[in-house]
Length: 395
Image (tube, rainbow, N blue to C red; front, side, top):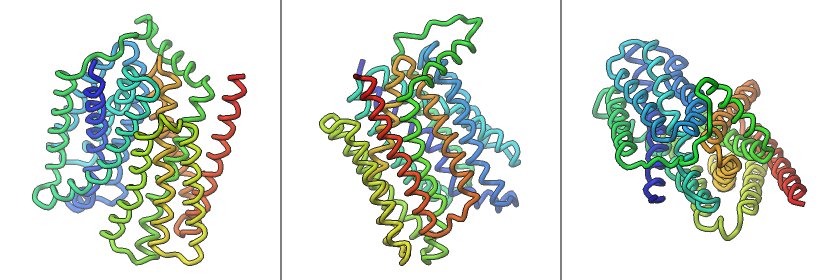
C-alpha cells in the first residue's frame, strides 16, 4: 500500500471540505445585496454548512469502522455533489440554507475519514508527521480560499463559486474511486440488527479513555483561543487601531504563518524531541504570547498585537496538531469513530466557549489577552495532570 498516495488523498479531502466553506466567505455581502438580506441571515450560509459537517462526522466515523472507508466516502461524496449542484439553481435563502446543510452532511466524511485512513496505514510517529502536513494544507487553504473567492466574484457571478466547488468535489470523488484502496482491513464486528448499539458502545469505549479526553480538551481549548482572536481582533484592529479591511486581512496572514512554522517543526523534529516535550514547548510559547499581549495592552498598537498573536500561534502550531493526532492514536482500533468524536467535540466545545464569552466585552486588547491567558493557563494545568496520571499508570 502506497502511504504517500494515501497522504495526498487525505490532503485533497481536507482541502475540499474546507474550500467549500471558505471560498463562500467573500460572496456573502454580494448575496445579501442581490437577495436583500441582512448580514445575520447570510452568515447562516457558513453556519449551516458547519453544522452539517459536525453532525455527520458522528455518523460517518463509526460506519467507516464497520463497512469500510471507501464505501462511506463514495456515499457521502454523492450527497456532497448533489447538494452542490442544487446550489446553482436556488433562488431563495431557505433553500440555499438547506442545500448548504446537505453540503456539510456530505463533506463530513472527508473530515473524519482523512484522519482514519492515515491512522490505518501508519505507525505513531509517521501518523503525527503526516497529520502535520494535513494541518499545513488546512491553514493554506483557509488563507487562500477567500482570495480565490474574491477573484471569482471580480469576473463572474457568485454562482461561479458553487460551480468551482462542484468541480473540486468531482475531482476528489474521481480520485477516491480510482486511487484510494480500502485501508480498513480490520473491520469492527457488528450485528446488522443492532448497528446503533454497536456505534454507541464504540463511543463509550472511546470516552472512557482519560488520555483521549485530555487530548481532545487540549486541542479544543487551543482552537477556542484561535477562534476568539479571529472573532475579536478584526473589531480591535479596525475600530481601535485604524487598520482598513485589506490591512486587517494581511494581519491574519502574519499570525497564521507562525502556525505553519509549528506544523513544519513537528514534521521535521517530533520523532527526535517527542510529542510531550513539543506540546510543553507549544504551551510555553502560548503563555509567552498571551503575556506579551497583556503587557502591551496598556499601550495598544496593531504591530504589538499581531506580533504577540504570532508568538501565541507558534505554540498553537505545536499543540493543536499533536494533541489531535495523539487523540486519534489513543483509539486506533476505532479510528473512524475516534476521529468523528474528536471533530464533533472540538466544534461543540469551541461553540460553547465562544457563545459564553460572547456575553462578555472582548473588544479591547486587555480583555482579549486576559481571556486567552486564562484558557492557556488551564490547558497548562490539564497537560501537567495528564503527564502525571500517565506516569502513575505506567508504574
